[in-house]
Length: 386
Image (cartoon, rainbow, N blue to C red):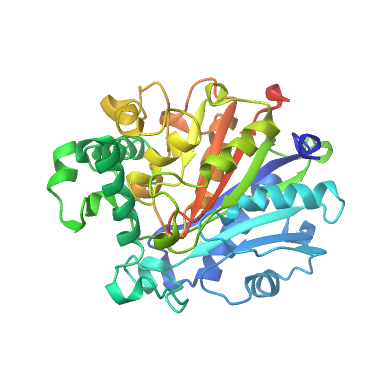
């Protein structure tokens, strides 16, 4: 069944909205809707064509019905499964399944947030969930969890703060070439190390931004994709895995469920890490790409810090990672997963301007939810990869 999904559906439209600080007091659903309309226009479609809805929201108890009502959609298939920032990447797989089964013809994946203008700070949105083994210690969610993972990686493998800083510096160099990025000013290793400590070993520059923003993607079956306005980008492989919710129940602070999601995505795609031209990894904190590069198979466990050193994932390096600037410099409106999809699609279409990865035919998107909890991996490719 999984092999039958390879190349069966394609992303034919992507859109962004409300990046940085959204003007005019826009709500989260306003921003989401703007991104959805932008993606549909990109595909040469309208909201009237949408019959499959896959929204992600931290602001609505019932995002499926709320977004459908707001957009005026009566979907024949709807899925609003919420697994944090990994949700939009996970929805690529769900949308492909629904399209293949004939449950819908046009699938809309969308996310929007006004976190910066509404709240102005980085905070978990689900603190009402019981966490009896953690709350007594008064952690600062979510950063305390990621600081634990970073500290453990340093202890176990000798990873250094300088290597963590390499991730932030690489992201900023990509952002400097992206006019849509929120932070584009020069950033060096010492700038990261000397910035305000938030939770050791992570400084404020090791942490994602707090911005507004929304993104959306439109998917159709492959046989219809050829008739759409834009060059189709095909889903070659996808998988999701989750092993824990609370960081205190994580089996190993240095290994995430990306080890499973990556394996499943590569198996469906019939590809290996060596076949990937560009990576879009969820970088809520600088430790994230290091863990994901290891767990997805781009380097061995424990070698991620050394792997990212000396500009390897920066412009001009051997492995382009987070070419839009990532959550560390492009923007992070509460959840980042949908932006991995948008950037991957634009790279494979050759639409990324100064930051374009020459000859890119394959892209890996990886979404992360909660505190390294849910992991979703998707591999996208041009028509040449079918």
